[in-house]
Image (cartoon, rainbow, N blue to C red; front, side, top):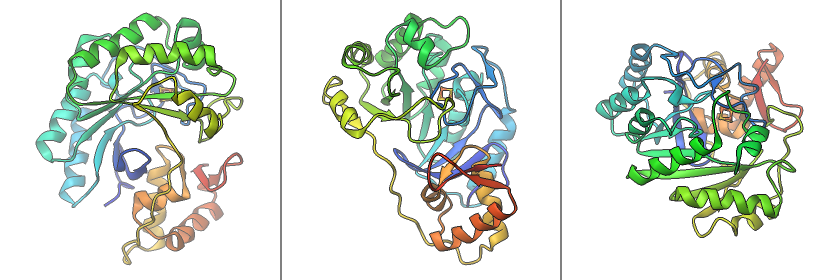
Amino acid sequence: MSCGSFRYLFGPVASRRFGRSLGVDLLGQRVCSFDCVFCEAGPTQTCTLERAVYVPTDVVLAELRAWLGSGGQADVITLAGRGEPTLHRSFGVVIDAVHDMCSIPVVLLSNGSLFHIAEVRRAAAKADIVKVSLSVWDDASLSDVNRPAVGLRFADYLSGMITFRDAYKGELRLEVMFIAGVNTGDASVEKLAACAAKIGADTVELNTVVRPPSEEGAGAVTDDLLLHYAGYFGPNAVVIGRSSPQAIECDGRKDVAILSDQVMGLLARRGCTRAEIAEGLGCSYARLDVALRDLLTRKRIRESDVREDYFCLC
Ligand code: SF4
């Protein structure tokens, strides 16, 4: 079952790294501690370090219960959404509740900016897989790339993730995002790799901009350059490629209206490629194309001018 009718659940979507992922949005809007130049969700509306209950925890848990109760299946349940999930004061409660409800592993996708707070580290350690990010090496690069909320210092950002790694027994992944001409060049990458080494993640994922970014000038680096930079990050570095999910034949009972509604629910959280939508909703390209045409004609969605086969809400 997919989540067109839920408010805080989205997908399952095809994740390039985790398989079929049911997303849980704990912010409800664009709230983040960063306003990254490469963010695919667009500019951050509320850039803050303030932790709060941004969406009602009991409603999120009720939706998860309903989704599982209706036979929902996914490879992972991911705390993600359009901002920083650790800003939600009860994200650890949500992780505990998922573990009580089912055996699906919980992934926490975080920028790591609040890991200098002990309570955040304790809650994050409940997740089965944690992915944090680091694409900078000092306060100046942090300000150029991630444009953090006022008050966040690079030293705290980095030391928080190092302290977390020391205690965390689960799988820790670190994502490094390269933006052409912003955090590239061998001298910069060497400094960045030295900071990443201090964290000691199980895997370092080297990535670049593949979806339309928040800032138009935030461009991708080539695969060859990513491979070259991988040499700085040691044997645990992997270069992340574009997804090539297999479309799965959809349930024949879905009619176009239902499928269109599900596509809307998916795109309400973030833009997706045609392949990601097909994989996430488990439908064939032929069937999906009918729904996409329907939504394009009704101007409910639009195709990106920048990237072929990439769709967002109008
Ligand atoms: S990329 Fe992630 S951390 Fe950066 S602004 Fe977007 S949601 Fe926040």
